[in-house]
Image (cartoon, rainbow, N blue to C red; front, top):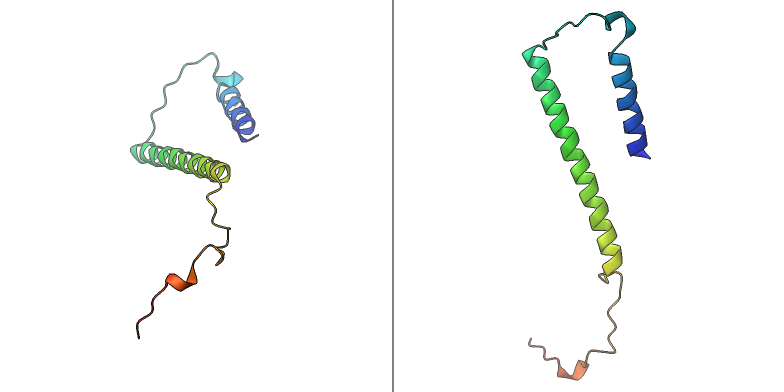
Length: 88
């Protein structure tokens, strides 16, 4: 679902970037250095965010498959009470 929305947004941006008024003219545009740096930081943070979300989803699926047993209670029937020594 998210992938489809992201693909649709990218497709719309690509379609609108080549508008009819600039189709005949080729004009080179240079970005300012601060804008290049800002876009690099935003891109890096987006990649890290996606990786962390995927990691948590995979770990959650792996934990549910393994059923580590954190919810199980310990019964005292299995423990022999007579073998315990206490010192006061």
